[in-house]
Amino acid sequence: MKPNYWDRAKRALAKKDPVMAAIMKRHPKVFMMRRGEAFMTLARAICGQQISVKAAQSVWNRVVICLDQTITPDAVIARDRKKLRACGLSDRKTEYIADLAQHFADGKIHERNWPQMDDEAIIAELTDVRGIGRWTAEMFLMFNLLRPDVFPLDDLGLQKAMRLSYRKRSLKSMRALGETWRPWRTVASWYLWRSLDPVPVEY
Image: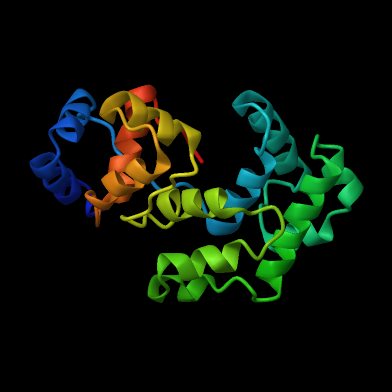
């Protein structure tokens, strides 16, 4: 389902930015969609770190089978870690996913409070989990919580798109351009990714 702010954001961005308007015009029928439940989305993100999309999907499929199709914190905690490693997870990723599960089980992840929390507070909470850095937290804000004003400037694809479409070379100039897209930086970022790859990526 399309985020309820999507069309409003597109109109606002197109009005102030002709380059962005042209990019959006080339991709008229696609939009960002919500991805999965919170724990599953974060566990899958950890699983896919530093490996190809194809390899990540293969490992994740085995993890799902190992957990009997039940991707919950309790299921991870109950499963022997040797069995998780046998799915193709490294020792470190196994520890990260177990730590994530424990954070959820212990109530350290305040999922019910997220609607009232600002983006930086949620990022701080998520990055307290081993294996979750700022980029992963920002992807989660965008693709799971559908926050409208996330600007993941550490993303190399976003940097490349800004260089190609706007001739921006420095992070300082990219950050300044991003300020002009407030409060819709999520939407601008998403369309910049589409300028490089028309097929939306699942995070």
